[in-house]
Amino acid sequence: MWFKKQKKPSEPGWKISTKIAPIPEETLIRSRVNKVSLLDYLRVGGQFFGRYFRTVGWVFLGGILVTSLIVIFTTPFFSLKSEKIELILEPEPVFDRTAIMTLLREFSGKNIFRLTTTEIFTSLQENIRHIQSVEKTLLLPDGIRIKVISFGPIYRAFIGDEIFLLTKNGQLIADIPEIETSSLRIHNLIPDSSGTQNTTLSTADTFLIQEIEKLWYQELPNFPIEALDYYDQEKELHITSKGTRFIITLSG
Image 1 (cartoon, one colour):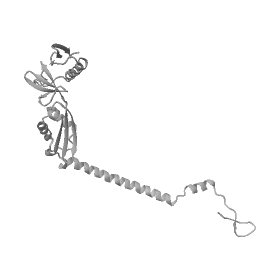
Image 2 (cartoon, one colour; image 1 turned 135 degrees about the horizontal axis):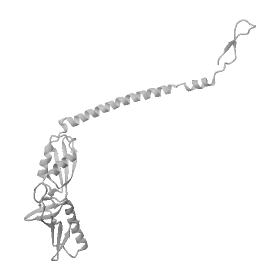
Image 3 (tube, helix red, strand yellow; image 1 turned 120 degrees about the vertical axis):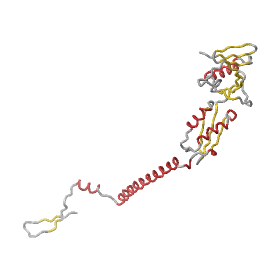
């Protein structure tokens, strides 16, 4: 409440007036709006300290991450040891375990986190061409488990006086007597571009030979296959059944 003194002309001196002085409406509104409670101050202070400690926390976590990366990639603690290499072969008989282990030991001393599956696959596939895929599992802190999967053998291939196994991707590998599969005689095999003799068939031809044999058994069950001959340069598959030779071209 505001009080205002008024002076009467007829009387000397001053006296208190009971009249209330008007206050502009916008002043009242502004006064009410600008009033901040103690809870508001506490809330603002809490937000400030929350942002401060959050920033410090991120900096702390960032420092831990950088330190961890330095330890992982630069210290010898995670270097691969040859005796910590585990090898799984699928199927086992198709591979030479000793040869693959020799290739894998060449990675000894490398950081297991830097050693990629692609790098391992490329190294193995350059020497063993019937590898289909490679899987890697880390065995912390200094070991790995490698699973090598092969294209399976589909035929026992006879080339002159030599015997091989023919895999699904057209590779001729050393014969393994315990593997049971169909027989295929291969004639006029074209050497590969490296000059090595009798190393591979066309992947497409290998697929077609297998598909034709399957189709023959489905459509002609009363005509058992007595002999299967493949002529590489002519691109022909000869099927002998009941004394009759059927010639199927793979060209076109």
